[in-house]
Length: 332
Image (cartoon, rainbow, N blue to C red; front, side, top):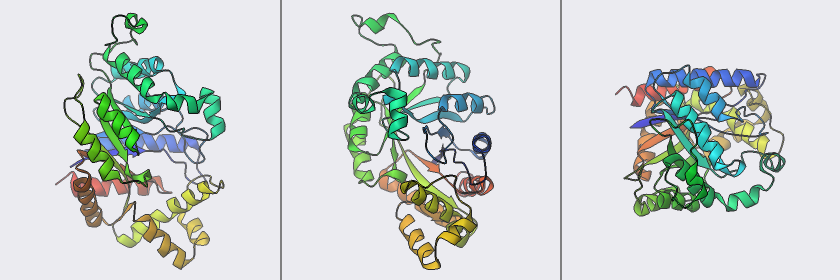
């Protein structure tokens, strides 16, 4: 099984954004040593508790501190940007770090309505244009505009020897249809979807149209995982993330709380209930339990790769979770 890392670069309670970003760089370095295939970092804007608003800056920093792990955005939120500028940025990264750059394409706002307006004026109109914007971005990356198109006269420089690999990210049938129509790889966010993920991914795989850059459908499924030496420890580590998500939903969120803060906020019965509910979407457990569930998920989705997102209060516990999973799967 191929495993990869999706990093939302969370800020822990009592820590600074600088601490979170440094922890992200360390996670990428350790992930490379452990054998993870790729490291993607998410883009968020004015989102309480998440520190990365500019993935391209972090990818440049992380690329300079790693050697071979693939790097990418999960995702560039295309409604906020012009396709030409995105192509220039990721061509630049692909020139600096040859054959290592992925370009994830998404349509979510990644933050508040006010932030979306500040970034792109008419976000909703740009969301409607995502198919058009995506097609234009792919033309820039592949340098294959029709000769009569005005953009055939320009290139997003520097032009790397190996272009960034485009992925369409999403949680809906729309994103799957777009990826299959345009012949790109597809990453499905199982950890943030309430929809019938396996059916959506299967439809992408069935209707995929080969392109100049990809001859066969390729899928990643992203899942939230908390792994510890024992099941009880993993459930304890999961509580702060559960509290943090509830706080964000009510507009009260800040950094990811501590375990003590979660204990003070939840009764014993609530902890049991919330962990039980979380396990419907998350994988929480000891290394053997996590391995079993990851293989089950891969089989359910017929996925080529599993991408893991882990949020704990302690950056050390997060790193340990990735380490335990890697030792259980990647070292066998």
